[in-house]
Amino acid sequence: MPEDQAPSDQPDPTATGVRRTGWLRNRLIALGVALAVLLPLAYLWATSLVPSSYSANDMGYADYGGGPASGHQHHGGQSVADLTGPRTGVADVAVTLTARKGRFTLASGESVDGYTLNGSSPGPLIRARVGDLVEVTLVNESVPDGATLHWHGIDVPNAEDGVAGVTQDAVPVGGRHVYRFRAEVAGTYWYHSHQVSSEQVRNGLFGTIVIGAPSRDLVAAIHTYDDRRTINGRTGAPRVEVAAGTTLRVRVVNTDNTLIRTGLVGAPFKVVAVDGRELHGPTATTDTFPLAAGARVDFEVVIPAGGVLLDAGGVSLGVAPPGVDPPGGSLSSATIDLLTYGTPAPLGLDVANPDRVFEYRIGRRPGFLDGVPGLWWTINGHKYPDVPMFMVASGDVVKMTISNTSGQSHPMHLHGHHAVVLSRNGVAASGTPWWVDTLEVDDDETYEIAFLADNPGVWMDHCHNLPHASQGLMTHLMYEGVSTPYRISSVNQPE
Image 1 (cartoon, rainbow, N blue to C red):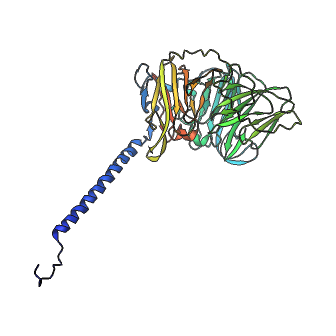
Image 2: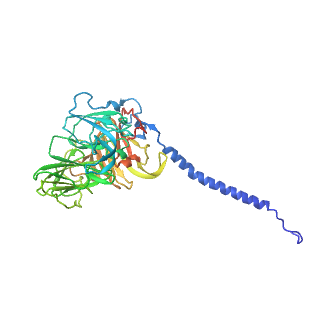
Image 3: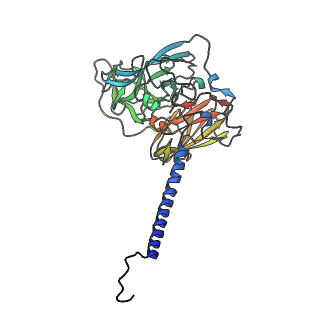
């Protein structure tokens, strides 16, 4: 440049073009990165959306467990609505239960908001003998979301199972529904709503039912209301007077969402039944019993002169002769293990040659469920409702392996059937036949169970930590040739 020529103030067009090109390239790269992240998220969000109304028939994908595949039944066949209990005949036990929402008083005097049956929670204890025809009429006076009654552990015909959107429609305010079934197996059971279950059961919509000949027994329903753990609706340490020398059956029902360590303090006792099934060769023990959410256990004890104490973790019930204070003390640190407790007996089931073999792998992963981000439960790697539909035929012997790597424990509950535990973590059962309808599967545990498919229908198979079920840890056992006319929706929320 000549010395007498001043530098130009004009921008260098070449440099400007380079900067513009770089800016554009950076913007395009940023846009590409954003799309690479957002498009998969949008896809995952969209594919996680659950229809506003759908049938359990259409859920997920059919898993035939190695058996013949005759088609995932969507329409036709036998309707769940026709799989009823006896429609005629005078009931031996007839009860009307009126469901209400509102503030009520516990048996121990505290006032809580929630749900009642005939004005109380727990609802009335229902008693029946083996062979009785039971008729229960549910009247919904004021439960705004609707209600049902599920007979937990009683293998009723499918139409009587009380699952909203699967075996019936939820009973609306002002409506009623009649359940009829034969009381076939003696045992300790309970009933509860299977509509918006995580809320309605937690807040009181449940009761107990005992089937069997009259005997000296004591029913103890454990439930937590507003962080208050109770026995039969009582906080603290209530007591019952029973004469010394009495052989007493203590029926403990866990209606909460988590496992409870329970047992008797003050005398040895026997574990005589679990989930409504008698144990073989029970022996006297003072160890603690781990009672899964939804499960039941029967203790048999001869009341000593000093009485006994039922401990249920934060609440207790004293049982002692008149004028005697129940004993103090705490539960044993040792745990009863039904894998080895009692003595073996024939199963009545050919588990060596099953007709169907299933896996039920419980996991957890981040993602969307119905458009909501979170950490969700999975079954065989799939999130609800894209979960396996376990398909069986009447008469099948079914073997199922349940494994859990989700980081939390899960009380797994199969409706309409009892299963026998064959092994845990590869160790074969060597004690009493251990029949269950609710099985606690801890993290990193694997159970092998078996059952006979002898109760046609569409049956829920879910976690009985009910918030877990509401978060997608549920699927169904479906019999070939059976379909349901009901639909899951905002009106029917079975959880």
